[in-house]
Amino acid sequence: MKEKAKIIATLVVCVVVLAAVSVLSGFWKRQQKEANLKVGIICSEDESTPYTYNFLKGKYALEEEYGKNVEIFVRSNVHGNRAEESMRELIRKGVSLIFVNADTEAAVNLAPEFPKVQFCQISMPDISPEGKPDNYHTFNGEIYQARYVSGVVAGLKMREMIDSGAVLPENAVIGYVAANKSAEVISGYTAFLLGVRSVAPETVMRVRYTGSWSNFPKEKETARTLIDEGCLILSHHTNTMAPAIACEEASQTGRRVYFIGYHQSMMDVAPSCALVSVRSNWVPYILQATDAVMHNERIESIVKGNVHGNDISAGFGENWVEMVELNKLAMGQGTEEKMNRVIENMKKGKTKVFQGQYTGVNPDRPEDTVDLGKGFEECSKYSSPAFRYVLKNVIIEDN
Image 1: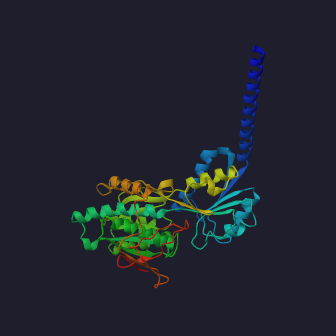
Image 2: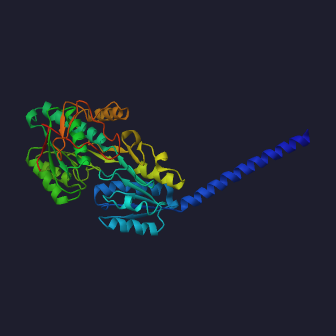
């Protein structure tokens, strides 16, 4: 019996040792593999603009998560033909994963040539994800959700001003500094207005276009024009802080104009009038996509979100969109509680954004209209926004 017990004990020890060796072997192989990963990041601008500053939070998250196991190369201010040149340069350096926030077709064009490189680009309306190479991926935050919530914040401030008698209902006008008439921009400002009107239905909105994503002087001039036209709260879909600065300067002269920011907090440049900001949070996608590449997994099998083939979108539920720095000194009464409640309902699918007694008209094709009484589900097919209809009677386009 004793001899038999010794044999069993010896076998158990052998099994444990073999298991430990196997685990350690796998661990070291994984570590070796991870240490070899090189990641490229292609940016249309640099960190001086809120748009790229926000995107590069993903870089810092990678550094914190993986340390020396990941080598990261960033190329900023990449435009036009430079995008392809920059990507080829990174591939020569051994990069096998490239994140792109630039408006370029270089990534999708290079993907067939370099099948071992994974190209991950913020989705563009002009590039459908259908029929694209398996190593080309698109992603986007469902920012319309945050835009709607920021509208609720603005609406509560407008409601407070109307109820106190500081503003007449017929003067409840907000403004929007918009880059262009793309679906991405129209979807965002429509969601913003619908959020405002959910608590202050008297409100209408004036929209002025700058014709550029980043043009500090033009954005500031456009914001000033909207202020002169009587807009009491402004927001924007452009890449600089110029509209926030214009509102702060107006407020300092006695014309208090409140502001809703994009990409980052605007409290540093507009402390007296910034109410809150919205941002897309790229960190979850960048971290999860990197993890997938490290372990030879399909990106869309690892990243959590609404998957459409090689395309993914997500909102508050997956922390892909966020509200940034609510100004408790300037906000309307009850704003924080209401904001959090709307976000929770959004996560549960209880809040329908593009719905109501409105008719929208496509500015490029007036015969193309939409009845929001039936509702419109944004990002149902792709991560790129699709709502491109200007609401009649409540949105005034000035140029």
